[in-house]
Image: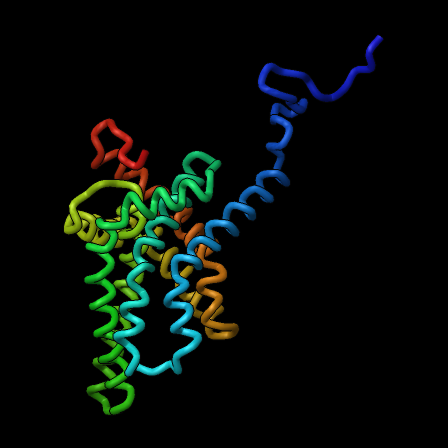
Length: 247
């Protein structure tokens, strides 16, 4: 007589007596996620290699702002690809990192540039103004500097929704910004969570290195995507008519 075991053979593979397929345990899920996040993080860094080169080779100076601006142009599509891949991971619990990342990069490249270039220009102007105000301290300049900092924080917060929406749905550029602004206030819990993630990231950059932003980009983005998942589902439910646009 055959010795009984705690596993049952099925047509699709071996199933443990807890109902999970072999290879789908918690350890397997964790290792898969580490592998996927590490690989797409590598692709994200690869897409930003031009900026990384100038950031390392040039002395940090606002006189190089134009160089930084040009070098950051590929960052927008790379961010959209990152959000696209991680949104798919959360929805489907599984991805093909190389295929999905570069599909998201190529599919959204033109539309993302329409969004990213104006944002990058505005941020560049605000950063230059902030530097000027800090070099010429006065009560009025400090007030304006505070306003600019708040503006940069708002842009950073809204941009999370901008890239998530652009990565998952096909809307006109102005509608993407409208939806992003709307959900920034309508889903205040998710917005507060994003602000918290940004603050923690800035703190880590301050106590370690600016490179932490690139090295942990996929993990940071993953937490933001998890935090805004309900927003994407709300958009899918209320603004998409019986079609999955991100497929």
